[in-house]
Length: 98
Image 1 (cartoon, rainbow, N blue to C red):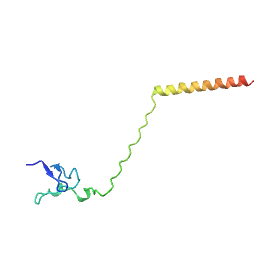
Image 2 (cartoon, one colour):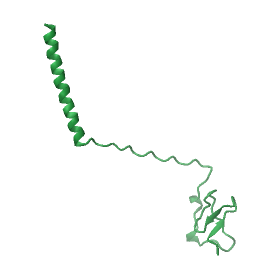
Image 3 (cartoon, one colour):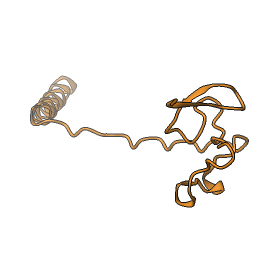
């Protein structure tokens, strides 16, 4: 007993459990009298039409990382230094313009 079947459309060998050919994606054709029961049959609406364009996959949502505590502290220190330098520059500007 074989555990595979040959696709009549492209002659590729597929595992017995496969309902569609892995190469051409055509549904498996069963010999007369050996078709699966109604509950095992695949509805015609579930068979993809190869002529239809494939749906584009949605792009993943971007992931934004929150700054760490060390980064936030560094930002605060840099802001304080900039404010101090601004004040010093204003004082020096006033002194030199007199």
